Image (tube, rainbow, N blue to C red):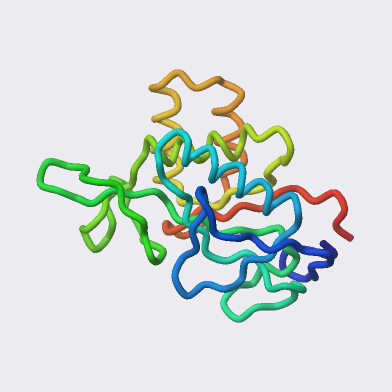
Length: 193
């Protein structure tokens, strides 16, 4: 990976494949990243599959050789990944069955999708955040998530006895404001030019 996330290239990238723990958002074809990012997504996907029987849904990473892509300012150097939130169907009694989302879905501050069909699965999204941040091989630089959803996740972590250092890290790494639809990961890359 050379350069910055918004002005770089990908050298010797690795292709992320769908598997037991990872599925692709339909229509998304940019699944190239650094070895570190791809391996992280595979480990996190495997963890979520073991714990909850679900796969993470990945949107875009980078093009095979990096560089500018049409609908992102970043994603140029193989160090960014968009991951869909985990959701459940909405029912009159609250949360229904888990659902694989096929597109980015925006959630309001109460965790309900704007179209009313889904509910933000706070417990499983906290587990996803935990798996990402406690990975021993990759240190995440940024996680983009909206403030209301970040607060939901942090409150859940506190209520369920999460370690203070994990809570601090989750708050710090996710303190960058973003749209409400997806987590965007950006691992540190000490080899960046």
